[in-house]
Amino acid sequence: MARGTVLIREDRCKGCELCVHACPQDVLRLADDRFNAKGYRPVILDESVNYCTGCGICAVVCPDVVFTVLREPTRRAKAA
Image (tube, rainbow, N blue to C red):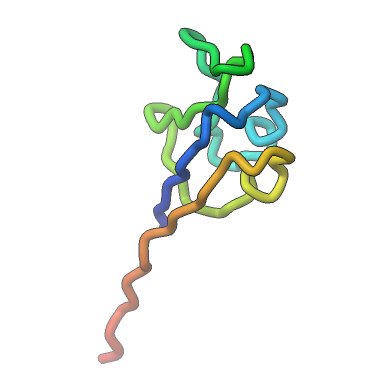
């Protein structure tokens, strides 16, 4: 299965939750314990729930360009 992660610019996030609802792996949530400089609860990656595949849907739906998606290279099986 594909594996990846996202880098999140918390200072840009306005907490609209579009990415949270769009994430097929349910790894994004709003922070409970902090606010960013704009006064919003930023989105954070919660890999304790599941893991990120690096699909990039969060980056596509985000109006504030908060995400940088990183994807690990997949290993191909050798032909016998």
